[in-house]
Image 1 (cartoon, rainbow, N blue to C red):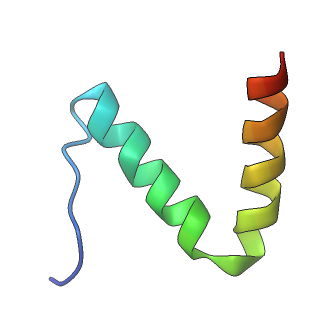
Image 2 (cartoon, one colour):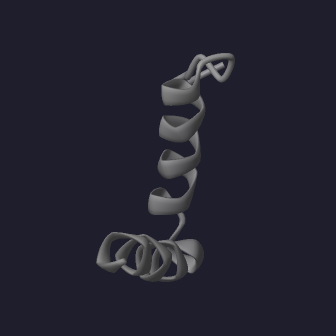
Length: 42
């Protein structure tokens, strides 16, 4: 197995893993960014 691993049994690890997937896959990056910007603007 290669790459980073995250402790998904803990909230921070789970969120870090999700962010890693959504920010490293170009087809998902724009949608993820838009969602984060919306959350931060509220």
